[in-house]
Amino acid sequence: MSMATAEEDLSADERAGLALVRESGGIHQSDFWKELDVNSRKGSRIVESLLEKGFVEREDTVYNGHNTYYITLPARDRDFSLLLAGDMLSPFIGDDITPRSDSFSRWIMNLAYEEYNDI
Amino acid sequence: MAFEELLEDPVVQTYLHELVGPRGMPVAAAPPDGEVTDEELAEDLDLELNDVRRALFILYENDLASYRRLRDEDSGWLTYLWTFEYGKVPEQLEGEMHKLVDALEARREYERDNEFYLCEGEGVRYEFAEAMDFGFECPDGSPMEPMDNGHLVEAIDRRLAELRNELNVEIEA
Image (cartoon, rainbow over all chains, first blue to last red; front, top):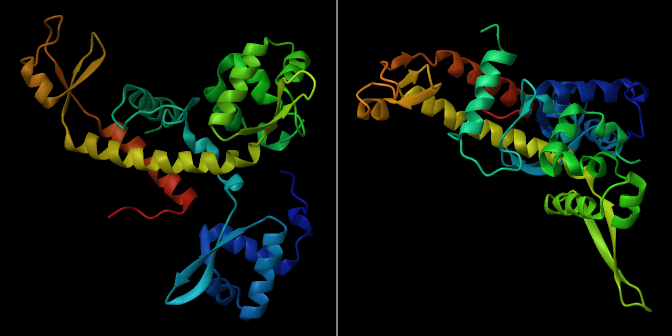
């Protein structure tokens, strides 16, 4: 899991690219280079480098009728604490329950009265 | 030990605990580098072999461990060599976040579409139709009180917004 390259070691272009992916949550490669205000070749070089270093992931997609890539952050960068209500984990994990199950009611109560007690 | 960085995340720890339970947790929390047998794990961790096997099997069922079998040529015994596959944990948790979004959306609709009545004494909530069947009277004879669930809906909305933002998913029409 350890990252081969630290974020501080990225070039200025790579850092700008990574910031753009983070900000957007996910972006098509054809928009990526336009937003960064570089040409498409340079844009794809930046993406390739970020991919190789493990900072982003990408998949094939069709966008505005063209084949391009969709660039996203790797799953490990997600904020998994959103699965918690207080210290209770989402009850859907490991159990076959429905949105009306009692265990989910308790989770939502925890959310409303413990975690968001400012509402 | 492998996957140290990942295992520092308290959510990952809670997740593993949820899957394997307290007795399996020593196995799940300390994945060794490379392959290992159940007997080695039981000895290293000073655990019952059955607890180790149970934990490994749960991890296997959840795609978090794999094994290959070796047959000892002399005795004919099979040895299971286990590998921990925790590289899949982030994708699985991300999948759980998507599942939670769907569940919260469904639950929000249910909360919005129904009126609820509460029996404070027993701490039980009834849907309107159920409450009517009971004549709006609790088992202890006291009247049921209408319950305002706006607070719950607000909490659901807030978490949905956070999850959608994090997962970059659109609001369903």
